[in-house]
Image (cartoon, rainbow, N blue to C red; front, side):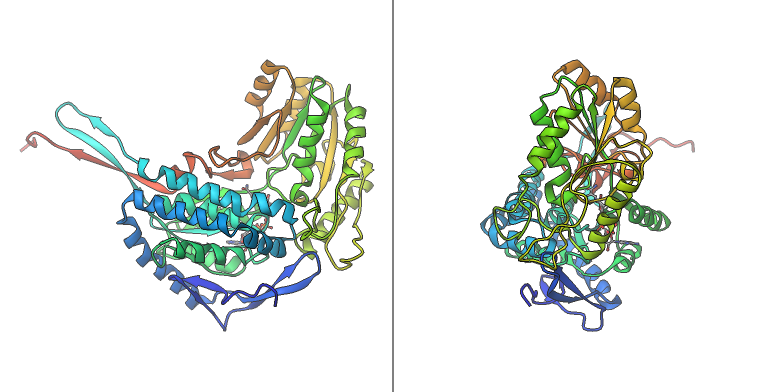
Length: 487
Ligand code: NAD
């Protein structure tokens, strides 16, 4: 098979197989062909991964932070050197066009490793003057952390979780999505090559139950999940039952608000990026595009004209800008929402069904789709579709659009387009979303904390903020005088 790894899992610095585990394929979404076959982790394998992590963590926690940082930065360099091969693998596993994976996947993972590698030696505690006596705080690791990934940005998600965890002195057992199991194994190999001690980063494969076994394991301190809201609820309740710390990066149905003074072409660019990049499979996508009625038809005309220029086809061709969806179930889900939109009475501006790519008849392709005249209560405006389906809604009044933008259980992201700087800040201040953009959309540099309000998540990834979620503070009181007692 085209992308068969040496074995399914990576534990204690080497590849490990679990012949008794449930076999599952990795499918290339452009052709439907199996490119690899893996076995899900059985109980013995889960045990071995946690045991390796416990041992690795002791060595790693005793490694000076500056040295931890050097290892992460070296791994970043190797990721960059192998960017093309890693990007091709990611394209095979996810179907995302090479045009994207070359710049957005391993490359953003490398940014993350570099960033936390640079922070390593700066993670200090504080000194608290108590008048003679004093206290100090230390930032200590949590122990063994579990990372559980989604399928849309597999290597980026592995890096976003591993880098802050490792820099704080934790070990990690990472379970990639069963849909995209491959690149995390390469990442684990690269970390070993960069000098990471064995057992500090391990990869086990499997479905949800393997994730649940890892979370419930008594030697695991924390879980960080990227996934859907229903999975987040299950993970939170299991973590709660075992009193484990949890970071949850979940789904969204984010608003992008375009006022009548906005630069229409920039707003159209942002709406395209916010709905069609990665074939619409991005958690923070601005899928509810509120456009002021004064510019609505102009906006829709430009959007339709530009969407025709999308190059849909072979994801390995660097000219392709839209690849297939990740899987057949995702294809069926997205097509069903396109039908729901039509039945609900939204106006179809473009797209609206599957797409034929002559050379790839079995690929999971759909047309980039725009619905206009969408009403707030329609299912296409309320539910996360996770495909290239944009809903355009009208508005006239600022207070009204803010209330409607916030009228959702989600709160991952939001964007505002206006040339009025006061209005931009006034609106952003009122939006219930963890990550917001003014006059752009979906840029997530590693320096900027990322995460959700409301049902879109708990905790933050990236930036200094992530350190809080992978470390704990120990306070130490130091008595400089005598100890008084009642008797
Ligand atoms: P999913 O929820 O189906 O699966 C996510 C991961 O959780 C997979 O690895 C899966 O095996 C695992 N899992 C499933 N059930 C589990 C359980 N009971 N216990 C432990 N682990 C379990 O999500 P998906 O379909 O892979 O990804 C798409 C979703 O992820 C979308 O909702 C999207 O918005 C969200 N997402 C969020 C972010 C973010 O940063 N906020 C980023 C990417 C994707």
